[in-house]
Every structure is written in structure tokens, then in C-alpha cells.
Image (cartoon, rainbow, N blue to C red):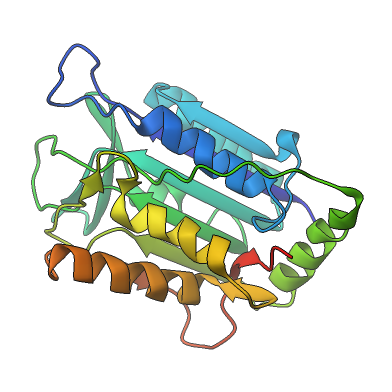
Length: 242
């Protein structure tokens, strides 16, 4: 199976402490580590592209390449500032003082997972967003993990063609974060994978776990949302770790 992951992080203007998100670099590392780990699908390093504080033009080149290469499966994470465009009826993902629309990262593959860890306040100006998930976990690969890639790919290809989008908050909400852990939603997605005991943990199951935790912690002020096909056959988020 031909797969590709694109992890995008934008910390904002470092000269402006009110806009700069210190946790983004850690977020990028933790999601990359997750994908490289057995429970995340044991991706090869060359299958993962990282875009940290790059320009909109550089990111668009990555997205064009994703579309042109026609991968069987694409995984995208965006962590940074964001808002919701009432004009375009979709999320805006900020790249310093510019932005791209959510629609630009959609439909890049027949099977695709998108995680957007941003705020979704209905505003035109730059808004404060969340820092993405932090999960301190080092995975030591052994010969026993040789089938993780194969099992992960079989789980993906057994699903119907679909696009799953996991949002850290609903429209017109802010995404909260913790000083040590980062974004409530993205962090708990990774926790769900770490604690999973099933052979395959679907995106919907990981989402439900994270959503419940976030709603309880914020007293329903932050309500994650999900867009996926109406079937039980949802793309996997992770596979069993042992």
C-alpha cells in the first residue's frame, strides 16, 4: 500500500508572545513518533513529511504532490491557530499572517484521515488556538513488530473509500490546552491509542474516547466533532500494541 503522512505545525509569530504557541514543535514530534510506532502503523520515515513553520506556498506544494501521487492512504495533522469562515463554511488554518482553507487538504486520497487541532471561532482575525497533543512515549522496535505494517495496511484497505475528519472543537468554540499535555483533544486521541486493547481501534472509537474526556474537563464548553461515513466500517486510528 502506498501511504503518506503530512504533519503540519505553525507556531505563529515568535516575536508576539500572545500569538506564539511553544508546544507546536513538541506536538509535531509526538505525532511523528506515534506514526513510527507499532500502534500507529509502523510508518517508514520517508513516508512522513513534516512541515513546521513553513510558508503557505511550501505547504501548498506538499499538498499538490500528495494529490498528484495518488496515494492509497493519506494521514494529515494540522496543529496551530485557526478559526471558522462563515463565508466559505469551513475551517481556516493560519500560516503566520496568511491561511489556507480546510478544503485545500481534503480529498487528496480515496482513504484519508484529517486531524485539525485548532480553534473554530467565527472570526475573520487571527484567534488563539490550542497546542496539539503531547504524549511522552518511546517505542522500541523489535523483530516481533514486523507484521504491524502489514496488519495496519490490511485494516485500512479492508475499509470502504472514505475521508474522516476529527475536529478538536465545534464551530464557534475555542480549543483548550494544558500547560504540560497540550491540546485536550489531540492528547486524548493518543491516549486512546496507547490504552487500546482491541486489534483495531477505529477513528470513531478514538474520537468518542477523546470527546468524552474533553467535554467533562471543559464542562461542555469544548465539544469535539467528527465527519465520517455513516457506517461501522471506519478507518483505523491505531492497532493493538501488544
